[in-house]
Length: 113
Length: 113
Image (cartoon, rainbow over the protein chains, first blue to last red):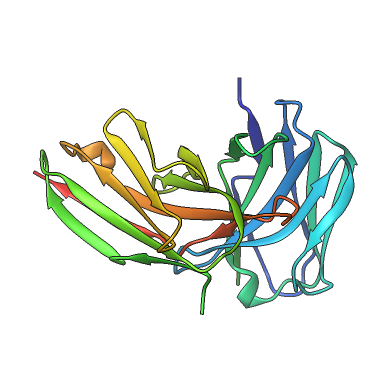
């Protein structure tokens, strides 16, 4: 059973398009995240939701809009895609408590041409 | 400057050898420090989680140490295997940070025959 799943795994699109990435976790966790990993492999947090409520919103352009229809899902919609949006996007989830592990999805490689 | 710095940036060792990766952080106070392993093309996977009061934590051939006074952590890998080739990431959770984990810059390890 996949704990955190993301779709699609690869996404190639042109500048200016709008696209969405979906994420689902079956671990019963309350907290979910979106991270962006650039070419230098640095993982940067974008958003975090706790039980469908936005709790972390880093300085991400308004073109990025997360949506959490329920606590098992956190989708990422990106408007007007730009070349600089090309990266690998990871979804993750984590339970409550300081010893709770964080589980990552397989990543979505977004290429904007 | 990132609050979690890792060294070296990259490392090449021969199979069977030991190695130690370093993590220096300025996040304070913090509730826990984690080490993740990220294989190429995959999401990070948790190796160890230590609270601020713990000094060491092992997971098989991986042993993490923590010195909260000097704000340093290390990950020691014993008897390296080819499958240890990956990026190793140090992650610190600030106290009261609302689950906002601070990621390090990572060390890229390559194990060769």
